[in-house]
Length: 431
Image 1: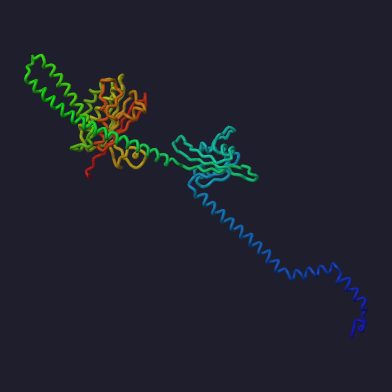
Image 2 (image 1 turned 60 degrees about the vertical axis):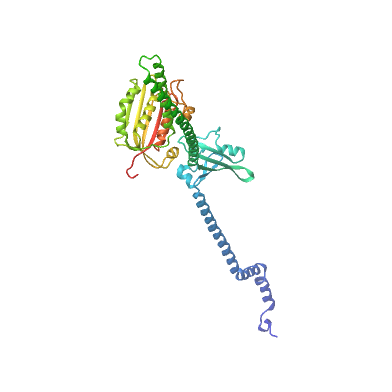
């Protein structure tokens, strides 16, 4: 067998070289490392690439979730924002930013007033109450401009159950509260209308029978007067009976007017002409101590109804105004054209949409209280001294206005005068 020695090589030298340079630990480890790198580098590169892919995918999904959450957050129409423990807004949705401004983030905010104010240690807004009590609190906040907000405040807990702020939801419930108030007003108005209708039927039935009795009394009185001469001593008694019966018949007629539901023969009535023709009589009724002022639109307002009934309405209201100003004052009668549409005012009046003639009769007298205003149109209700009024004047006014498909309301407070406002539908040829 051939060997290194055959070719003249010293086997010992070759053996020692292998041991020292090839198989020594430093060189052996390096060789093994390179072999392993050659074998496993593809796997290592695949693992690193997979980790980078997972990280990139996680970032993309996180951004998508963040965008989805922000879109949902901003789509909420209510005000939603987060306060820290220093009353500073750290986050807010779009509705909050649009209402309060983009610079609201980072600013102190006391939302119990829904405005930026300096926060003091004795602040008692819902954020402080919620944080101090560790519970959700809720309250209605009404601003000076009439807006009403439903405010909910809930604490936010961090690590170790430590409160780090609060999340706040502010909902505008102004329209809801207005609708509730309008509903209550309509219910009260319906009850009042039903009560007045029942009283009208009851009073009308009694007045009709009473009027029949008075007709017999007046007829017999007239017959007896014809038989007595002017010098007859009992003729004066018969005349007193006749006069009293006529006054009673007039009262019965007023009650019948109150009980009627509609005008028998309505005709077009020009408001300006009616006021101009009726003004001299109104001035005689009110007297020289009352400054009567009549204000009209340039437009000629025409309604459908009974001109005599409208004059009776003005006369009754003017007489009441005169009695409310015993020491003199100002009585103003105005006539304007208004348009009634959907809204709080129309819901209160329960009128169909359209154009109306607004007649207002205002005085500078003693005014009326809330308690009196609730009963002012009821028959036989009066604030005058005994013997000075029947309590039917305003009840008849109310009835006549209703007969003309209109609406009447009264405004005023004690010591600040009274104003009656009457809405009557304007006449249209197309009707």
